[in-house]
Length: 401
Ligand SMILES: Nc1nc2c(ncn2[C@@H]2O[C@H](COP(=O)(O)OP(=O)(O)OP(=O)(O)O)[C@@H](O)[C@H]2O)c(=O)[nH]1
Image 1 (cartoon, rainbow, N blue to C red):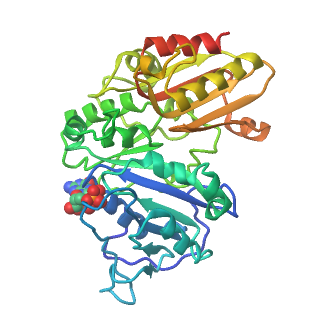
Image 2 (tube, rainbow, N blue to C red):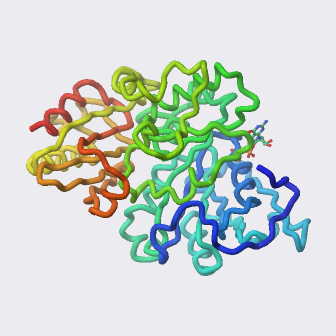
């Protein structure tokens, strides 16, 4: 980073978008979640003062029951009024960013913001350190009521989780789960994210860094992991990633031409080359506080198998049980996030995306297919609880039927 924090960038033309917008009529929205004190505000401040060519509206929000969380402010000053901080509801920054310090509930904040449509072309939503991003993502993705109103103008781009690499491991271990499934918020945040930022790497030992990275990767093998100091990251990794629309469901750096986000050191106990095999092995057996991931690969499947898979995933997501289990109480099954790619014998390919009970399977267009070189074989990744060998066998049986 060449800009100093004290430099207020001047307004620049929109010729430097970090990634191409998906749809010019829709404003992409990125949810930033993360552990308490992990560096979410620091990341936002970095974004708000960097020359990136986006006019970003930042919402610092408090979704859910966060009354016990002390309200905090992001201290951004403007060139015109260096003392201006959170006193203003909207603060327009010289680089085109719009800082919006609305503290009411989510949709109301977005409503207010969308009244200023045209003043920005990207929205960043910071959640509190205790927020589970799943329900928030669901508000912006596939919520029918919301889609009739504001939602039609907003498209969920992705969920980014900031982790404090010094205390991350400890936070995950100590996380007291308040939900009936006893999962814990930090693990829900990791499970529900599309990109993971390991922040404060300047303060952590290489061993702690590697351990935390490995741990996070085991909980969510589908999300690329980036290491940062004070949130300094190439914005193309977190903005305009189209995590819910792009036909790249599994962010495995080894299979893409994108710069490898998974940074390795000599201490790493895995490499890009054999990471795939490790995922197969470790994700089968790995569990952290009951959260694990399951990855199943398959060759091209028949249309009948595709229909059966649709039924399978619906039963798993909506009823928390396997289709063959008569009662939902027979196992402790909960899927927080799912992603997948299924190739049919007839030639069609479908992307699976799921957040909690919401899911969709969209056909991949030929254009996207050509541009991105989607592999022939399919795979499904589930992140959640109770994903044991019985679930694996059940899924494999459906996909291979
Ligand atoms: N050394 C170091 N300090 C950092 C880094 N990132 C953030 N900090 C500091 O960590 C503290 C917490 O950072 P914030 O950005 O406020 O964290 P937050 O996630 O927004 O905090 P909450 O919203 O309260 O959960 C601040 O004092 C930051 O200056 C980093 O990479 N290295």
